[in-house]
Length: 304
Image (cartoon, rainbow, N blue to C red; front, side, top):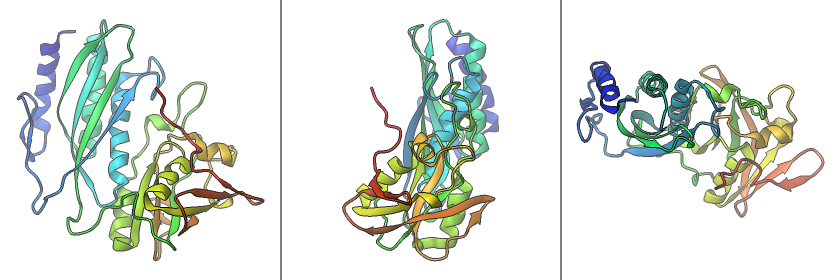
């Protein structure tokens, strides 16, 4: 792989970037023109590692795509946000064929552009041949309405309903690593529609990537409230045991708290009420029809 030849191929796509990109890839920094009346920038970062977030040997396009999609799911979780631009840093094992590196770049570039968050810069470096192909993505976003609040994890209020989008479980196969987690649709349209419809009645939100109970636990802890969840109400993928489904992870749905009339469906995605926010001490309690258990840590946790 010849780095500078590859970069020239990257720069050739500069002509397809939107007008907000004032200085495109090719300089030491990119320059972006912010939308009018914008004084806040939201920033998130996430990575995708072959063998951990995708099966080993997967088309590198899929790895690049998932790295961007994971970041877009974080943008959706703020509700009052729209993606603006992305940057990517790739770690390329020595000996990787140039065609595979190009597929990684195309997965990054095409996915980012599809969601109006063009890839405007980054870096690539070689790592040992034994290392995994990986890419870290940083995403920039701006508030949809700069005068309104963001849907943070600490914003749940006593009396809120607890809701989740879509269905949970079955996003990835434990044996093959395949599944819809490799090409999911970030719930940006749902989140923005919820924000437009509910406004200040939409309170806390999080994307469900580590398992429903684990992620709801973050809202409970940050908001210092108890979230009471009824297992029978949780929408579960056919063929999955409910307790397995809520801890499986990689769903990339949204869980949120709100008051008011929450629609049963938005942008073609079902929305289900699964519980209520109560005064408490930052835990998630699950009622399974016979007993109530504390499940704030049921889900995926990243190790070292």
